[in-house]
Image (tube, rainbow, N blue to C red; front, side):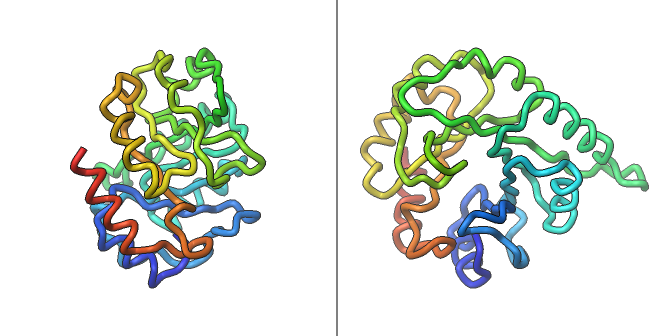
Amino acid sequence: MKFKENMSKVAALGPDYMGFIFWKPSKRHFTGRADKIPKTVKRVGVFVDASIDEVMGKIDAFELDIIQLHGKEDTLYLAQLQKELNARVYETTNAPKKGIEVIKVFSIKDTFDFSILAGYEPLCNYFLFDTKGKLPGGNGYAFNWEVLNQYPSHTPFFLSGGIGPDEIEKLQKFIQSPASAHCHAIDVNSKFEIEPGIKRIDTLSTFIKTIKKF
């Protein structure tokens, strides 16, 4: 999300998550305010090779619920990030504070070496599989979902990469297939936009209602 008016309209549709990109080269780079979003909608901060200090600062500034790592962050980075997050699980009053979840993104085209996930599994709540392209994300086209038939992990994942209204039938088949056993969520973006950061509300509303019936 990028623009306040469009953001409130999308939030009214009741999505489970809304993403905010904190990578400056992105056309959807977020610099505004994320207020008036219901607590039922989790705020996802998207980062690309950002410093841990920057990530922690954005968590506080925007009350993020989830961190999505879209760059080349390795397991050492994830371990240090988890150390910082765990140190802030409790307020000084000893009242429980929400734990911040972590999504690590991996890009796929036609094949993928799933063995590289093993080191990340203890450090992530979710994986996200996106299409391999020129940009870290938002390339606008889908990868071969059949690759996920080989998924060896029990870590839930987000399915991403060029998913739009025309993929409804394909998505239904995927969700009903063994490959979706650990699919936690469907991530959509560019195929529902009028321009970067502005979503088509009617089209998105229809898509959400349809997906929830599967």
